[in-house]
Image 1 (cartoon, rainbow, N blue to C red):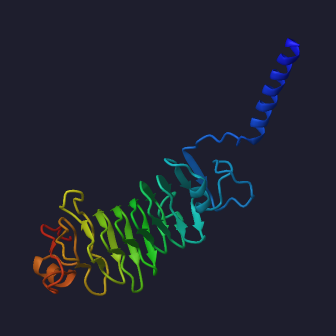
Image 2: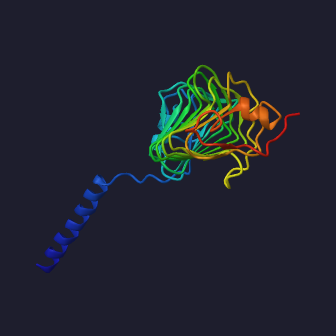
Length: 270
């Protein structure tokens, strides 16, 4: 009798183990790098370097926190890409990896977007925290929009946008650190509005070195906020304080409701 009971107990244990194995999800190891290649048209995709996903969005969706989504050179014509928290999304170079329909980061943190040509802008909205560097912004749909209570570190990008859009628009209660960017062209000026704040140089988080000497139809920088904007150590279209203040900047001199722009010292063009 005792042997029979022992046999039943062992049998129950075996059945329990087998049933657990059937219902448990297969183990999926964390991968630090997810690969994407628009040229992969085989249909065989798992995010590995040998079988990369064919869309950036798929790579982002499948990546775990802390991972890098590494995007091979190519043109990525997919709907506006939605970013996810705690990821680095890295192209193969701004001259090699093109995103046609832009990106949006809404209420995400610890996100890096680097080394792309972005033709339809990047939006940092809600309560987001992004690092945006080494990108080229082109096209007629704008450059970077920072809104809500978002925070963006914008460094070493080139802006070459057309149409009636600003290369950089900061609004609401956002805060932006802007350093070492090249503003080659803008259909509108860089705009600070509502209660946005930022550091364009000399405020403690940016040492300036932005080049604002590109082609703009009117002014280059408009500080339509009540706050003083630090913008020291930058290059402007003109080489004297009087001309920079008159032609390149719209602030409290032109509108009593605007904050001043502290742009001195500045870098003189050759």
